[in-house]
Length: 502
Image (cartoon, rainbow, N blue to C red; front, side, top):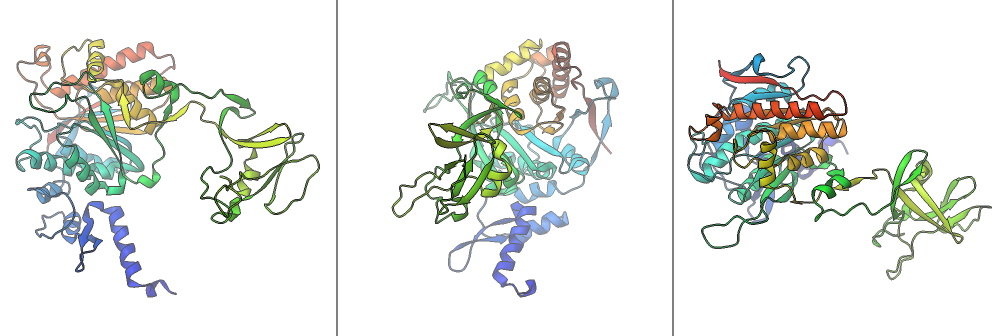
């Protein structure tokens, strides 16, 4: 059948799926005339995305709505009104560094970055204001309370989406005040299936005493989103590092390393699939005999019903299946892979019995869990104290927390973006991780050039703006790392830019 003759329903659903991949916030569940839910395109939002103009129109749809939403979306499509001006005398190693710090409004900065860094950012981490006070810095004149916060975040997330690589991920720190709204907002911008996880960070195990009823608060949240969840791999980190940081959450590695011609490995699981639902009926091509010669290392495979014996070979049958009417579990590997990658299998001969295990080369690897206990709000403050910046910033995030996120999601020369840079923890975390594993990651930070409070310790120390505190933290952290690094040159510099109006 020619593609032009394809049933309309398939073509329509394929078209909607294609639009959803490009503009996930313009596709939502709607009720048809029978009351059944289906995916449909919000053409008002789609036209607005494509036209750059404010499009009026209302319709009932599943999603997060608030006063000022359409105007907020329009902010992401209007051209930037500012430009970047490099401040050379505030930069560090500007001729050789790959790091960048921008002082100014992050909405304008993101618009400019979309022109130069679209699809280039592997990791985004942000710690936005939590909307817990009336003097909300980023109110953008959209409306009060939750609406103002959502209208502030919406265009910035829309722009951030365009900056991520296809396998890129983002993390947003948030407390309980806006976590529900944020999760819905991320689902709208990135698509519900691309909201990957909700990580609980126990930031104050002692508990914050509250004036009203209920329990003492001990935790915040870190919501994880992706540009394309299908392209995201597991968040793998060092088991020894995770155990050292969070011994209550991660055990020490329980498998002794072994060695072969390729290097160290551990064995954890046998080759057969432990799930009995994979068997000779559901996966017939994965049920066969494996023959191994202990002297030569040769491997052969035959059909499960072929009882041919080969001289000098031992035979491994699939694991017995105890479900009624079934005989075997399937193998986890195909015949072709068993023959091609036999060096990644361990053939254990004991008492004339052959057992086959898969080798794991990631000897120290462990998958990050969705609870973080260890790095605390107090340890974030100690990080600044160690740099001689005591009480210059309220509630800075711990370097160890950010290093963990950087370590499990990035490598090599990946780019890390933080457009609510605050005290600059993300920059220090990237530099420290590079020192630890020899990576060449780069950071790109943006911080509003907000004036420090006249009565603050930061103002008393001579810092005119929060961005000045951020830059000084990066300089001091870089100086300390250069003096301690045993790996040779590590990029601890940054180019400093300020936003200015055309």
